[in-house]
Amino acid sequence: MSKYEDVANDIIEKIKSGVYPTGEPLPDQKRLAKEYSTSRMTLQKSLSILKSKGFVYSQQGAATYVKSNADSIANMDVGVDQYVGTTKLLGDSRQIVSKIIKFKMRYPNKDEQEKLKIDPTDVIYDIKRLRIVDGKPYALEYTTMPVKLIPGVDEKVLHNSIYGYIQNELKLIIGAAFRNFTANKPTSEDMEYLEIKEDDPVFRVTQTVFLDDGTPYEYSTTDRPYDTGGYVVFVSHNSN
Image 1 (cartoon, rainbow, N blue to C red):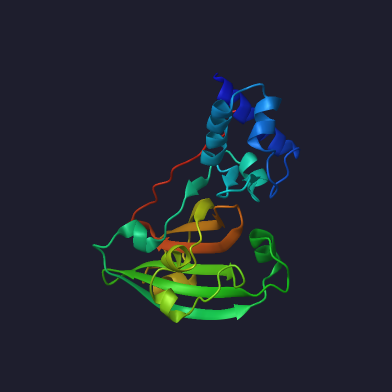
Image 2: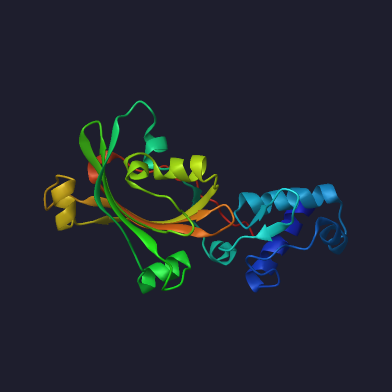
């Protein structure tokens, strides 16, 4: 194993053990290079590995920070991948329409507080959308997001792409998503909105999505009919 891989793995272990706390900056590159008796160039390769695995991020002209969700990444073997929304996933050749079933603001329950790392008094968006592709029901989405983190969401945004709004209007960088994939029996709402039968299985994705700095900004569940295809997932493994 190369020197820069050894350094990267040692830093990961220190993140796991709390030597380098989440949300805090790593020591500067000069100090790290001295600590590991290596060159700045080698250290930069090590940091590139940490960034690709989702443990750290850098701010221009500032330090390299341990992501807020780095401890979660360290304890997971699969499920970290770059996320794009339905509009980008399917491309411009498909006709995508969003039907807003519910859109309100409320206080989060305990599960939402935990997943989004927010306080009981932090207001969230509560969104239910039916995504229709080429005239056919494609996905039923249940989405919650902190208002203070993603301000300005309205019906115009919901009729288009939430992720496009986050990236293009708010200029935020979407990082990783932790996803759970299951096959389920349809709910009454699945049967109503997705126009499926009681014995038709649905493909369910429950996920927490993070910004590039590791801050969670979405907790959601999406149900899709079994015949709408699957997901392509790029999995990042920790090589310790």
